[in-house]
Length: 416
Image (tube, rainbow, N blue to C red; front, side, top):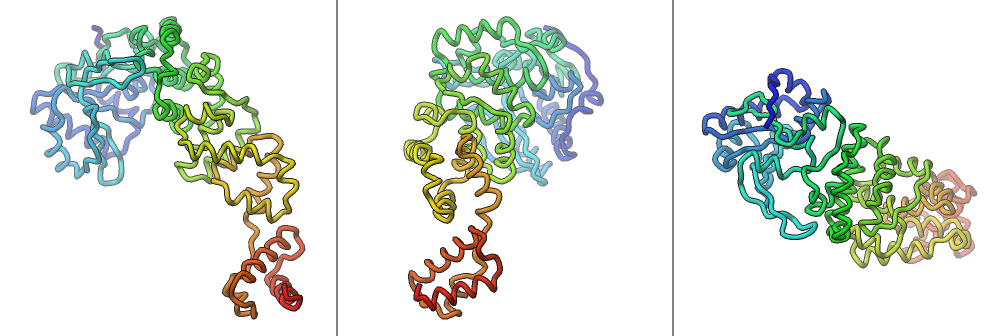
């Protein structure tokens, strides 16, 4: 075991958390000390402080029972317990919305390839040895016996100084294949390199088809982190590095060929889609639209069927045979994430982007109520006239409210 003294004043300089977060740490530290529990930070905050990089996460671990501390801790900080998981973790929300994850020092036992672990409370040594990479297995003590000390059991300090991404053991990716994707993220984010053991662990995982056995929800969730946890400018490099390691193929995904112009549509998705639709778009962004890949990423059968049906029907030739209103109405029936995914197809991009940027916003000024006031009888005719107004506006034949009213009168005169 190796330890390295690091004063809290210096360590905390790299914690980019609000004042309430730092106050929570202070209260937790005092309570843990009173009870004789070892409290420490682990993973990202420790790694980043040693690299002199800002960290916004708090991976706060207790060698002891959080249930003993939580009632008083929540009362003092006015926090709210959001949930407790089966993996001995807790998520809290502080008054101004800042959330903190609390972790119990634990041992993990894997009963099969790519299975979820069985967990049990343990000491800090077992907790360190369950982690993914050596650079994430460093801990920083907030209380005795290692207060203001970095503790290294697995040569994490050496790998950090040498810029290496190294799993703790060579069966690491057999236990949890998502660690390989995580390793890509750290490699790209930190500009590090893979250690030899990374490749050896990958080969062992291939031998037992670990990536194929990874459940669709876990695979999808790990890929979403490329999009949600990493800067957009790193995305293509993340995908390129994953592909170089054959992670997509090993996971039974057919990756689509990316084009530099795709970034514009990705930017639109980030800006304009709701969070859930944004996640679905990103998963579709990565793959060719085919049954197996959609299933591997957790799309349910009805959704897969709809996506594939639309992909098959919406060819350039099909759309060109629709008039402009029919085309706009067809696009409006599609979920936004599906439509933007179709826009990644070169032969559909111009037509869909014209709709997205311009045509979808062109609608009549007049409403059904207005039409009735102009003498249109209730019933199907109201809808027919509104559609005709929109068709003429889409074609650029009319633009103003006055022109819409004149068209309505003309249609009534012709008994439209």
